[in-house]
Length: 222
Image 1: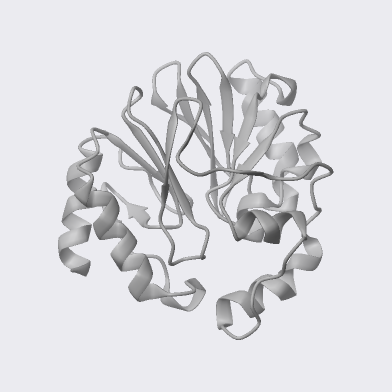
Image 2: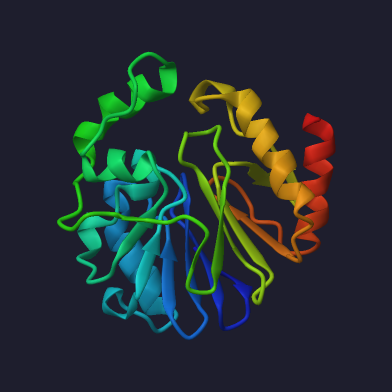
């Protein structure tokens, strides 16, 4: 299913178990790309709204997990890929997640199904295009939230989950450091972002008063 979150600019691709997002602010950005089986689905969803992979100007990765980077290779994109360290190195294969915690061990096991990009992953720090990039470690060490204030949209990966307009924390077993993830939620909420949409990897995006929903979750995890 494809859902318009901001008319003419932001779309959610519901890929079954995970979401990806397409943003057009004059440049076309794909945020995350599902599993290795998601490429054809993403291509079809793009076609529904008048786009094709060749239109993508950049890919932003919220974090390195199979269900967020797995579909990139199958799209045959001619576009730079951006992620924050150490997740960038994990995706391009120049470093491996630590096997000393459950999350890192799981990433190593399922990493055999990840097709590495041909080109080096570019490191994102503060901003890229119309997006501010905020470090939100916890789910992974390099987790990043991408905020487009002009479009009043925050793309927050697995920092949170969503259900019927409310936000919750992600499942603890699949989060590297739950306490650090909670801190990242509080830190992002404290920025008092001017956003309506909070779009996450798993669940239903918040489409109204997103900043308030994030602030409410920050209080609950405080």
